[in-house]
Length: 123
Image: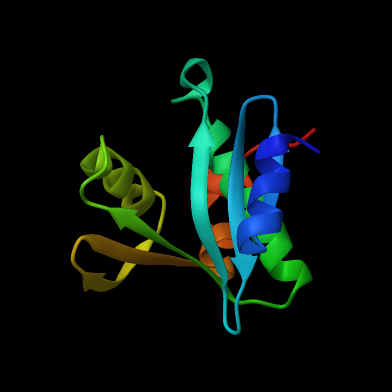
């Protein structure tokens, strides 16, 4: 377990999925899995790795019987427009606006039925 993973578990009680190419921090909530951070390293972007990361976190949601993934995009962050458009392009929907955050969600049905996810090959 990395120090980063230990830090978020110890300070926030968040879980982390961690790979050589990226990570996601999340917590299990009453009605969803809430994603706090998602990151794919620069050399692995734009080749489906982000979709793989979403598919992996969707498997966690399914394991805990949660019907959706939620996250907030901070409009003050670098590249927030690009990130929001990428999520929306892959089936996410806007849940609420609470300046400076845009909250979005993606149902597990959307993940498993969407060919952008379904056609991915997993190790």
